[in-house]
Image (cartoon, rainbow, N blue to C red; front, side, top):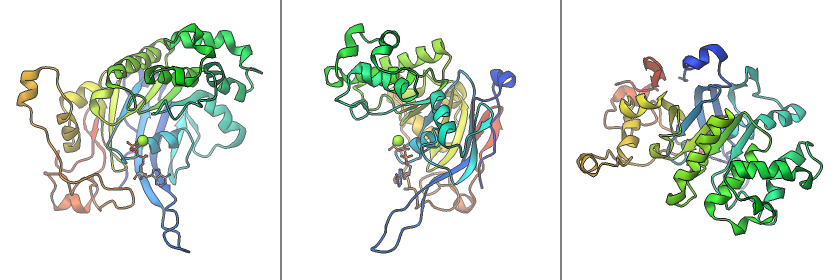
Length: 338
Ligand SMILES: Nc1ncnc2c1ncn2[C@@H]1O[C@H](COP(=O)(O)OP(=O)(O)OP(=O)(O)O)[C@@H](O)[C@H]1O
Ligand SMILES: [Mg+2]
Protein backbone atom coordinates (compact mmCIF):
# COMPACT_ATOMS: atom_id res chain seq x y z
CA UNK A 1 0.00 0.00 0.00
CA UNK A 2 1.27 3.46 -0.72
CA UNK A 3 1.14 6.76 1.11
CA UNK A 4 -1.64 9.26 0.44
CA UNK A 5 -1.15 11.48 -2.58
CA UNK A 6 -0.90 14.74 -0.73
CA UNK A 7 -0.33 16.03 2.76
CA UNK A 8 -2.32 18.77 4.39
CA UNK A 9 -1.27 22.35 3.73
CA UNK A 10 -0.24 24.72 6.52
CA UNK A 11 -1.76 28.20 6.76
CA UNK A 12 0.44 29.78 4.05
CA UNK A 13 -0.34 26.93 1.75
CA UNK A 14 -4.01 27.61 1.46
CA UNK A 15 -3.16 30.80 -0.40
CA UNK A 16 -0.25 29.63 -2.56
CA UNK A 17 -0.24 25.85 -2.81
CA UNK A 18 2.95 23.79 -2.59
CA UNK A 19 6.04 24.76 -4.56
CA UNK A 20 6.92 21.09 -4.73
CA UNK A 21 4.58 18.13 -4.59
CA UNK A 22 6.01 14.62 -4.44
CA UNK A 23 3.19 12.22 -5.19
CA UNK A 24 3.54 8.55 -4.43
CA UNK A 25 6.98 8.15 -6.01
CA UNK A 26 8.94 4.93 -6.17
CA UNK A 27 12.54 4.69 -7.35
CA UNK A 28 14.54 1.59 -8.26
CA UNK A 29 18.21 1.26 -9.04
CA UNK A 30 19.58 -1.03 -11.65
CA UNK A 31 20.70 -4.12 -9.72
CA UNK A 32 23.85 -4.43 -11.81
CA UNK A 33 25.31 -7.74 -12.95
CA UNK A 34 24.84 -10.64 -10.57
CA UNK A 35 26.77 -13.30 -12.50
CA UNK A 36 28.60 -13.50 -15.79
CA UNK A 37 25.46 -13.15 -17.90
CA UNK A 38 22.65 -12.41 -15.55
CA UNK A 39 21.55 -8.95 -14.52
CA UNK A 40 20.20 -8.77 -11.01
CA UNK A 41 16.69 -7.45 -10.67
CA UNK A 42 16.27 -3.74 -9.93
CA UNK A 43 16.64 -2.67 -6.31
CA UNK A 44 13.80 -0.60 -4.95
CA UNK A 45 15.08 2.36 -2.91
CA UNK A 46 11.87 4.38 -2.48
CA UNK A 47 8.45 2.85 -2.07
CA UNK A 48 5.58 5.25 -2.75
CA UNK A 49 6.50 8.37 -0.82
CA UNK A 50 4.42 11.56 -0.82
CA UNK A 51 4.91 15.00 0.66
CA UNK A 52 4.47 18.65 -0.20
CA UNK A 53 6.81 21.55 0.46
CA UNK A 54 5.39 25.06 0.61
CA UNK A 55 7.09 28.26 -0.56
CA UNK A 56 9.52 29.62 2.01
CA UNK A 57 9.37 26.44 4.05
CA UNK A 58 12.19 24.23 5.28
CA UNK A 59 11.29 20.57 5.40
CA UNK A 60 13.76 18.41 7.34
CA UNK A 61 14.09 14.89 5.93
CA UNK A 62 15.63 12.50 8.43
CA UNK A 63 16.53 8.82 8.29
CA UNK A 64 19.28 6.28 8.82
CA UNK A 65 21.92 5.54 6.23
CA UNK A 66 20.34 3.73 3.28
CA UNK A 67 16.80 4.89 4.05
CA UNK A 68 16.56 6.73 0.71
CA UNK A 69 17.17 10.36 1.63
CA UNK A 70 19.61 11.15 -1.18
CA UNK A 71 17.49 9.16 -3.61
CA UNK A 72 14.56 11.43 -2.72
CA UNK A 73 16.71 14.50 -3.39
CA UNK A 74 18.01 13.08 -6.67
CA UNK A 75 14.51 12.20 -7.85
CA UNK A 76 13.23 15.70 -7.11
CA UNK A 77 16.15 17.29 -8.93
CA UNK A 78 15.56 14.91 -11.82
CA UNK A 79 19.01 13.39 -11.56
CA UNK A 80 17.34 10.00 -11.45
CA UNK A 81 14.05 8.83 -12.92
CA UNK A 82 11.12 7.50 -10.91
CA UNK A 83 9.49 4.13 -11.62
CA UNK A 84 6.07 5.43 -10.63
CA UNK A 85 4.40 8.50 -9.17
CA UNK A 86 4.63 12.18 -10.07
CA UNK A 87 6.63 15.23 -9.09
CA UNK A 88 5.08 18.66 -9.49
CA UNK A 89 7.12 21.86 -9.28
CA UNK A 90 5.10 25.07 -9.08
CA UNK A 91 2.10 23.07 -10.18
CA UNK A 92 3.82 21.72 -13.29
CA UNK A 93 4.44 18.00 -13.78
CA UNK A 94 8.23 17.67 -14.09
CA UNK A 95 8.40 13.90 -13.72
CA UNK A 96 9.63 13.29 -17.24
CA UNK A 97 10.95 16.64 -18.48
CA UNK A 98 14.14 16.42 -20.52
CA UNK A 99 16.39 18.55 -22.75
CA UNK A 100 16.02 22.31 -22.72
CA UNK A 101 13.02 22.16 -20.37
CA UNK A 102 15.09 20.27 -17.81
CA UNK A 103 17.96 22.72 -18.22
CA UNK A 104 15.63 25.63 -17.51
CA UNK A 105 14.15 23.78 -14.54
CA UNK A 106 17.65 23.33 -13.06
CA UNK A 107 17.99 27.10 -12.77
CA UNK A 108 15.25 27.01 -10.17
CA UNK A 109 16.38 23.96 -8.23
CA UNK A 110 19.88 23.58 -6.84
CA UNK A 111 21.76 21.24 -4.54
CA UNK A 112 24.26 21.66 -1.72
CA UNK A 113 26.27 18.48 -1.31
CA UNK A 114 27.40 16.66 1.79
CA UNK A 115 31.11 16.70 1.25
CA UNK A 116 32.65 20.08 0.47
CA UNK A 117 36.02 18.38 0.01
CA UNK A 118 34.83 16.10 -2.78
CA UNK A 119 32.30 18.40 -4.43
CA UNK A 120 34.64 21.29 -5.26
CA UNK A 121 37.12 20.99 -8.10
CA UNK A 122 40.57 21.60 -6.52
CA UNK A 123 41.88 23.15 -9.75
CA UNK A 124 39.18 25.78 -10.03
CA UNK A 125 39.42 29.11 -8.23
CA UNK A 126 36.48 30.18 -6.09
CA UNK A 127 35.55 32.72 -8.76
CA UNK A 128 35.41 30.03 -11.44
CA UNK A 129 33.60 27.59 -9.15
CA UNK A 130 30.81 29.96 -8.22
CA UNK A 131 30.56 31.46 -11.74
CA UNK A 132 30.39 28.12 -13.51
CA UNK A 133 26.59 27.70 -13.30
CA UNK A 134 26.17 31.23 -14.71
CA UNK A 135 28.44 30.36 -17.63
CA UNK A 136 26.77 26.99 -18.23
CA UNK A 137 23.39 28.73 -18.41
CA UNK A 138 24.74 31.36 -20.78
CA UNK A 139 24.11 34.21 -18.35
CA UNK A 140 27.69 35.47 -18.50
CA UNK A 141 30.40 34.83 -21.05
CA UNK A 142 33.26 34.52 -18.57
CA UNK A 143 33.89 34.32 -14.85
CA UNK A 144 35.55 37.76 -14.99
CA UNK A 145 32.29 39.23 -16.22
CA UNK A 146 30.59 37.95 -13.06
CA UNK A 147 33.23 39.24 -10.62
CA UNK A 148 30.96 41.84 -8.97
CA UNK A 149 28.08 39.41 -8.69
CA UNK A 150 30.29 36.69 -7.20
CA UNK A 151 31.76 39.15 -4.75
CA UNK A 152 28.25 39.91 -3.51
CA UNK A 153 27.44 36.19 -3.25
CA UNK A 154 30.59 35.58 -1.22
CA UNK A 155 29.64 38.42 1.09
CA UNK A 156 26.19 36.89 1.58
CA UNK A 157 27.68 33.52 2.59
CA UNK A 158 30.25 35.13 4.89
CA UNK A 159 33.46 34.68 2.92
CA UNK A 160 36.10 37.39 2.54
CA UNK A 161 36.14 39.40 -0.67
CA UNK A 162 39.60 38.18 -1.62
CA UNK A 163 38.36 34.58 -1.54
CA UNK A 164 37.59 34.82 -5.25
CA UNK A 165 41.11 34.23 -6.48
CA UNK A 166 42.00 31.48 -4.06
CA UNK A 167 41.61 27.73 -4.49
CA UNK A 168 39.57 25.27 -2.36
CA UNK A 169 42.64 23.91 -0.51
CA UNK A 170 43.12 27.33 1.08
CA UNK A 171 39.81 27.01 2.97
CA UNK A 172 38.53 25.11 5.98
CA UNK A 173 35.66 22.64 5.68
CA UNK A 174 33.10 25.17 6.87
CA UNK A 175 34.40 27.77 4.43
CA UNK A 176 34.33 25.26 1.60
CA UNK A 177 30.71 24.52 2.36
CA UNK A 178 30.06 28.27 2.16
CA UNK A 179 31.61 28.19 -1.33
CA UNK A 180 29.27 25.31 -2.22
CA UNK A 181 26.32 27.31 -0.94
CA UNK A 182 27.38 30.41 -2.93
CA UNK A 183 27.57 28.24 -6.02
CA UNK A 184 24.09 26.85 -5.37
CA UNK A 185 22.77 30.41 -4.99
CA UNK A 186 24.41 31.79 -8.15
CA UNK A 187 21.39 31.11 -10.36
CA UNK A 188 18.98 32.59 -7.79
CA UNK A 189 17.05 29.35 -7.34
CA UNK A 190 13.73 29.16 -5.49
CA UNK A 191 14.35 25.69 -4.17
CA UNK A 192 17.44 24.03 -2.69
CA UNK A 193 18.09 20.45 -1.67
CA UNK A 194 20.76 20.44 1.02
CA UNK A 195 21.87 16.80 1.26
CA UNK A 196 23.51 16.41 4.68
CA UNK A 197 25.31 19.73 4.22
CA UNK A 198 27.03 19.62 7.62
CA UNK A 199 27.66 15.91 8.18
CA UNK A 200 31.22 16.09 6.85
CA UNK A 201 32.07 19.18 8.89
CA UNK A 202 33.72 19.51 12.25
CA UNK A 203 31.11 19.60 15.01
CA UNK A 204 32.28 23.08 16.03
CA UNK A 205 31.33 24.66 12.69
CA UNK A 206 28.12 22.75 11.97
CA UNK A 207 25.86 25.20 13.78
CA UNK A 208 27.36 28.13 11.87
CA UNK A 209 26.59 26.55 8.51
CA UNK A 210 23.08 25.53 9.60
CA UNK A 211 22.48 29.10 10.82
CA UNK A 212 23.74 30.47 7.52
CA UNK A 213 21.30 28.28 5.59
CA UNK A 214 18.51 29.35 7.92
CA UNK A 215 19.32 33.05 7.41
CA UNK A 216 19.50 32.61 3.64
CA UNK A 217 16.23 30.72 3.62
CA UNK A 218 14.54 33.57 5.48
CA UNK A 219 16.24 36.51 3.74
CA UNK A 220 16.02 35.18 0.20
CA UNK A 221 12.66 33.46 0.63
CA UNK A 222 14.14 30.11 -0.36
CA UNK A 223 12.41 26.79 0.02
CA UNK A 224 14.68 24.11 1.49
CA UNK A 225 14.69 20.36 1.68
CA UNK A 226 17.24 19.78 4.44
CA UNK A 227 18.42 16.18 4.63
CA UNK A 228 20.05 14.85 7.79
CA UNK A 229 20.93 11.64 9.60
CA UNK A 230 19.64 12.63 12.98
CA UNK A 231 16.96 14.79 14.48
CA UNK A 232 19.25 17.13 16.40
CA UNK A 233 20.67 18.75 13.24
CA UNK A 234 17.35 19.74 11.67
CA UNK A 235 15.51 20.85 14.79
CA UNK A 236 16.12 24.58 14.60
CA UNK A 237 16.02 25.00 10.86
CA UNK A 238 12.90 22.96 9.97
CA UNK A 239 9.31 24.13 9.87
CA UNK A 240 8.17 20.58 9.38
CA UNK A 241 10.05 17.30 9.63
CA UNK A 242 9.58 14.05 7.70
CA UNK A 243 10.99 10.70 8.83
CA UNK A 244 12.07 8.13 6.28
CA UNK A 245 12.61 4.48 7.09
CA UNK A 246 13.63 1.88 4.48
CA UNK A 247 12.20 3.77 1.54
CA UNK A 248 8.92 4.79 3.17
CA UNK A 249 7.80 7.88 5.01
CA UNK A 250 6.77 6.84 8.50
CA UNK A 251 5.91 10.24 9.98
CA UNK A 252 5.57 13.88 8.95
CA UNK A 253 4.50 16.80 11.13
CA UNK A 254 5.13 20.36 12.20
CA UNK A 255 8.40 20.61 14.10
CA UNK A 256 6.94 21.07 17.59
CA UNK A 257 4.46 18.25 17.16
CA UNK A 258 7.14 15.89 15.94
CA UNK A 259 9.63 16.63 18.71
CA UNK A 260 7.14 17.02 21.55
CA UNK A 261 4.53 14.40 20.74
CA UNK A 262 5.95 11.93 18.21
CA UNK A 263 3.61 9.17 17.08
CA UNK A 264 5.73 6.55 15.34
CA UNK A 265 7.87 4.17 17.45
CA UNK A 266 10.78 4.75 15.06
CA UNK A 267 10.62 8.51 15.56
CA UNK A 268 10.61 7.91 19.32
CA UNK A 269 13.78 5.87 18.97
CA UNK A 270 15.45 8.57 16.87
CA UNK A 271 14.44 11.20 19.41
CA UNK A 272 15.77 9.20 22.33
CA UNK A 273 19.21 9.45 20.70
CA UNK A 274 19.13 13.26 20.61
CA UNK A 275 21.03 14.63 23.59
CA UNK A 276 19.28 17.26 25.74
CA UNK A 277 21.31 20.17 27.13
CA UNK A 278 20.19 19.71 30.76
CA UNK A 279 22.51 17.04 32.30
CA UNK A 280 19.94 16.11 34.98
CA UNK A 281 17.26 15.37 32.39
CA UNK A 282 19.81 13.70 30.13
CA UNK A 283 20.86 11.34 32.95
CA UNK A 284 17.31 10.21 33.56
CA UNK A 285 16.56 9.55 29.89
CA UNK A 286 16.42 6.12 28.43
CA UNK A 287 17.76 5.59 24.97
CA UNK A 288 15.58 3.31 22.89
CA UNK A 289 17.83 1.12 20.84
CA UNK A 290 16.20 -1.06 18.26
CA UNK A 291 17.81 -4.39 17.67
CA UNK A 292 19.25 -5.10 14.25
CA UNK A 293 20.07 -2.77 11.43
CA UNK A 294 18.07 -0.99 8.78
CA UNK A 295 17.16 -3.49 6.09
CA UNK A 296 18.92 -2.84 2.79
CA UNK A 297 16.95 -1.82 -0.24
CA UNK A 298 16.10 -4.98 -2.15
CA UNK A 299 15.68 -7.03 1.03
CA UNK A 300 12.70 -5.34 2.59
CA UNK A 301 10.34 -7.55 4.56
CA UNK A 302 6.62 -7.68 3.93
CA UNK A 303 4.29 -5.51 5.97
CA UNK A 304 5.76 -2.62 7.93
CA UNK A 305 9.46 -2.37 7.06
CA UNK A 306 10.27 -1.80 10.72
CA UNK A 307 8.41 -4.82 12.09
CA UNK A 308 11.50 -7.00 12.69
CA UNK A 309 13.03 -4.31 14.90
CA UNK A 310 9.98 -2.79 16.54
CA UNK A 311 9.09 -3.81 20.11
CA UNK A 312 5.42 -3.04 19.46
CA UNK A 313 5.08 -5.19 16.34
CA UNK A 314 2.32 -7.76 16.07
CA UNK A 315 1.47 -10.27 13.38
CA UNK A 316 -0.53 -7.71 11.43
CA UNK A 317 2.63 -5.55 11.13
CA UNK A 318 4.49 -8.38 9.43
CA UNK A 319 1.74 -8.82 6.85
CA UNK A 320 0.15 -5.49 6.01
CA UNK A 321 2.09 -2.27 5.45
CA UNK A 322 0.51 0.50 7.52
CA UNK A 323 -0.61 3.47 5.40
CA UNK A 324 0.51 6.99 6.24
CA UNK A 325 -2.60 8.55 7.76
CA UNK A 326 -3.47 11.79 9.52
CA UNK A 327 -3.52 10.74 13.18
CA UNK A 328 -3.87 14.30 14.48
CA UNK A 329 -4.47 17.49 12.49
CA UNK A 330 -1.44 17.97 10.23
CA UNK A 331 0.39 15.08 11.88
CA UNK A 332 0.72 11.97 9.74
CA UNK A 333 2.14 8.61 10.72
CA UNK A 334 2.26 5.06 9.40
CA UNK A 335 1.76 2.65 12.29
CA UNK A 336 -0.99 0.13 13.09
CA UNK A 337 -0.67 0.58 16.83
CA UNK A 338 -0.56 4.31 17.39
N1 LIG B 1 23.55 4.03 -7.61
C1 LIG B 1 22.97 3.08 -6.86
N2 LIG B 1 22.88 1.81 -7.32
C2 LIG B 1 22.27 0.83 -6.60
N3 LIG B 1 21.72 1.04 -5.39
C3 LIG B 1 21.79 2.27 -4.87
C4 LIG B 1 22.42 3.37 -5.57
N4 LIG B 1 22.33 4.49 -4.82
C5 LIG B 1 21.68 4.10 -3.69
N5 LIG B 1 21.37 2.80 -3.72
C6 LIG B 1 20.63 2.05 -2.67
O1 LIG B 1 19.41 2.71 -2.41
C7 LIG B 1 19.15 2.78 -1.02
C8 LIG B 1 18.97 4.24 -0.62
O2 LIG B 1 20.17 4.95 -0.83
P1 LIG B 1 20.35 6.50 -0.51
O3 LIG B 1 21.69 6.89 -0.97
O4 LIG B 1 19.20 7.24 -1.03
O5 LIG B 1 20.28 6.49 1.09
P2 LIG B 1 20.57 7.67 2.11
O6 LIG B 1 19.41 7.69 3.04
O7 LIG B 1 20.91 8.92 1.40
O8 LIG B 1 21.84 7.11 2.90
P3 LIG B 1 23.11 7.90 3.49
O9 LIG B 1 22.66 8.46 4.81
O10 LIG B 1 24.12 6.82 3.67
O11 LIG B 1 23.53 8.95 2.52
C9 LIG B 1 20.32 2.11 -0.32
O12 LIG B 1 19.95 0.79 0.01
C10 LIG B 1 21.41 2.10 -1.36
O13 LIG B 1 22.24 0.98 -1.21
MG1 LIG C 1 22.61 10.12 1.32
